[in-house]
Length: 246
Image 1 (spheres, rainbow, N blue to C red):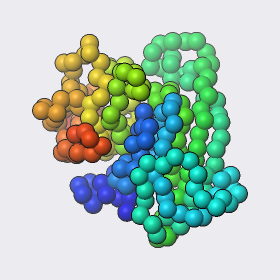
Image 2: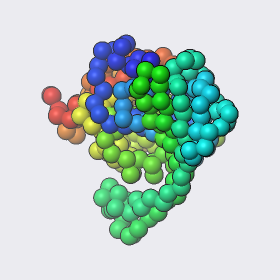
Image 3: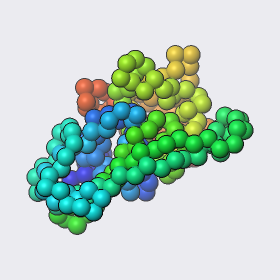
Image 4: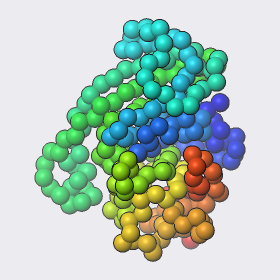
């Protein structure tokens, strides 16, 4: 349980975190695929993020035991897997000023954004532990203070109502994202929110279902692993190698 990606593809995931911006209620499959393979899963969205029902009766909110898991859920974990759930909530303000200067040449000093965080630790009967953070914050602003991303999971987003409206595969944002990836990181995406002005770029295979393949980008090589159906969408899977092999 929680290592389906390795069992299905026989590919090791490097140490790091899973990051999924604009996650919404699409959290069950990423947890099942990678929960036991990464140090932490980070889901970000300015709207409500819905986690699966753990089917666990031992739930602690800020160290106080509750009789049941409250809140909306989407999907469920099989009963008898999760023994205890510990939940803490906190609000922090994050300075993104340095990142704005480094990547966008905007020297405007301190730029702070409020990040409401929910931390869930799932203690399993087999003694493993799953760490999940939900950021009630903009996806791109969340990215600016993350490092060591070993899985980038992104699908089902849009520019319209209900979507993030962010160009995740524009040259500017893609440069920031890839600078955070670990060697051997995994990308799973349907290529949503490609900038319409940048249709012909080296990373276009991330978007084009009929043209999914290996490609180079900067000092990285994106190795195409295969296709995955889920959540009503077809996603491509790539492994990112930090040294360009071509």
